[in-house]
Length: 463
Image 1 (cartoon, rainbow, N blue to C red):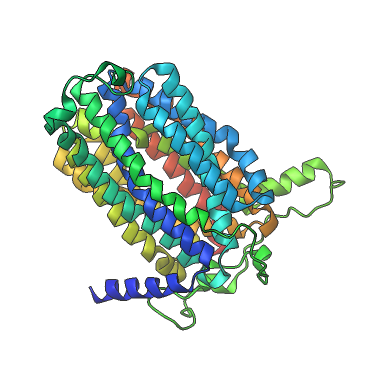
Image 2 (tube, rainbow, N blue to C red):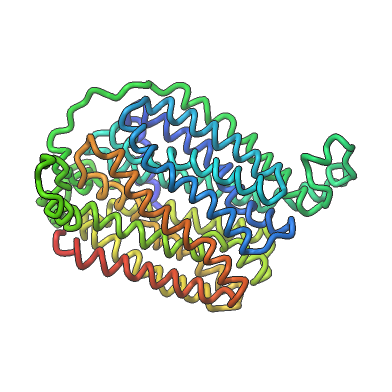
């Protein structure tokens, strides 16, 4: 308990030292996280309540991911050239408008189109995240900023999931909301109580998201004029003070003595193409791109269907799943905050590899058991182990790339994740309809095992 309070106090002090843009960005993440949690729990269940099966749910998710995948590289170019403030405001506005379409439309084509547009807006949010936080932080505070951003998002996501799980039942209990609609409202809201209760809950989520625009409007538009000595050669996140100490890093931090070679993007154009391709393939950037790609492929098979799996297959209520998923995200938030501490002691690659190894048997047991209490218990810890080192991975993958190329590099990482994810998500829905749930969990686990092998073989000896 004392350690937890000490960590919270240290992170609060660290937050006060962050640059103004970084603090405003964190506030935006907090305000929008509740909405994200409600959508995460309810949207797939809303589609199922309309009569759609898992294969169409997968198609809707595919269109969203396809929109994000096609916009990834244009987003990276825009982020390197234009104001971060404008990009954040307009991308959030696009997500808001398209999101309203996803809730109000009930026919297949409008649902697919609105999902595609929302994906385009999401691409800009995904790509701008790491470069924006890197640009608005010093090397010493960067690991904590990335981890705190993830943790705060997860904490508010938990709140949203708990609220989201309870809202449909509450709305359905209000007879005046479930009463027959006047003619002018029939086109906007569903006539059946089940779908309408989900619609009202999702619309409520949209109202919660509105204040998140305020901190975006308060951002400064230009880039901070700050020189980061040695940053292009890969400043180590492990050099930052750990949450429980204000002194120099411990002697056991072997990573603090090493510089990971940055991806060589400064070669002149006359260098032979095959030589440039060979150097790219051997670079840490390419390794991380493969890791993101395999992770995206594995996640696409089963992550979008967890709520349907628990509610439709294991018999949980939406409220119970909201509590389970919220608890899992709460544990993930805690483990993410502790990740820089672990990385400082055992190294970044070891941290990523070990935490992912622990998650594999948990995932397989969840997918192969038909026992709700067991699946719920293990679900609480699977995400926390798999995603614990997400902030460490983000920092590491950014620091192997020169600063002026980080927008494009992060576009590459996001594309590497989103494209396989877009392809495997509808495949997951088809597998559920045709052969059942176990297949998607087995295939996803295989993809995750490949990321572990790749990281250890290619980068394990560098740390």
